[in-house]
Image 1: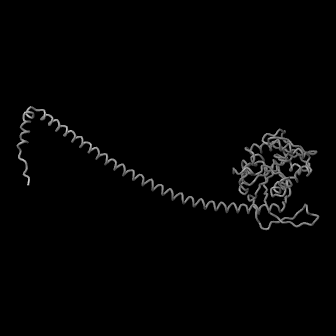
Image 2 (image 1 turned 90 degrees about the vertical axis):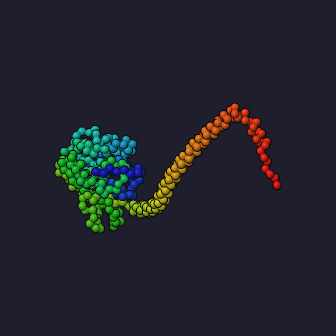
Length: 352
């Protein structure tokens, strides 16, 4: 089981009027054309009818009645423009259908089961309203092959997972494959709207179940019918759109390659700048350590100088105190005249 997410521009529903020339149209219409072979004289429920284009196909095939249900009220209201005798549309949750058991002989449920949060509950409800000899025709993208990215899909199933899921609710299950093939066709002018068409593949590809883009199944409680194969062809506009899309993707890839190269250059420059920053930070740490050591040494010398200066100051103050004591003594004062006389009689130096 695969859970996918992607950009929200992916459309949630197929709208024939706006997607007429696309492969998407052929995919959706082929399923209903195939199921239409089972519709004659049956009470049909189209579970998840969307805009109602499938209901028209089933009704045109000769169904006794066709009821289309969808959870989106606005979509159902728009689909009611397609109502005709024997055709009706109602808003309903296919996990809780407001219908009695065994109300329908044929139920179609195409590209819906991957949108619901509880697929087992939905299949159980479809089994409940299906008549004992009724048939469910159902499809889902094959998670192994379907392009990833539809944001509206809650769960996608592989072929084997889809079979196991259906077998929980139905005694009989038969799987079929719906492939996407680009084709080329030759018609008589009168057959430009083809009916019977002989088809062959160019090479033997896609013949093994599990290689299909969509897995289609029939399920019921009794032996299952074998409706003939069906195909729907799209126009060449789809191929032109693919080529334009391919060119656009190539430009995007080229731009991405240039951007990645630029990112690589920027990353190399960033790594070089980081190395320079680490080296600068290492040098700053070393210089700071040397500065702290020099400061500590200078502080030590300054402290020693201050201590020595303090000691010298103390010695000087002691000497001054001694001298002041001498000057103030009696003997110093008594001998003062003698010191003056000594200065008088002291012989003067001889002058030449």
